[in-house]
Length: 79
Image 1 (spheres, one colour):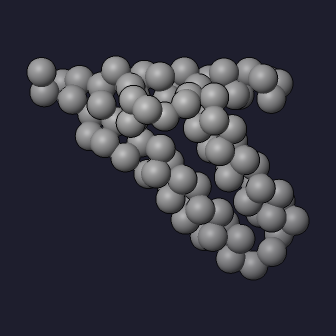
Image 2: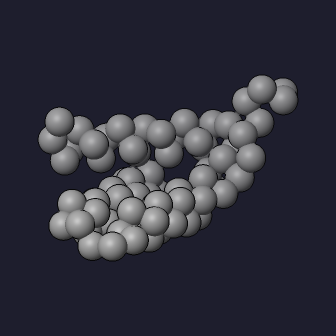
């Protein structure tokens, strides 16, 4: 999988989030995809290098960024 493939998949998830209300419709899906990929890839390198507690910090960083992008509640099944 290429970086472009990963970016496209994340951007698609963001666009899907627009439809159900999880993502602010003012968000740019390409910018959000770049943010999410960057925050996932950086900690992945730290985990790979084996620094202690890197996995815990990585999960927290990724979770915070995902929560920032997907900040709403999905209304797909409550309609």
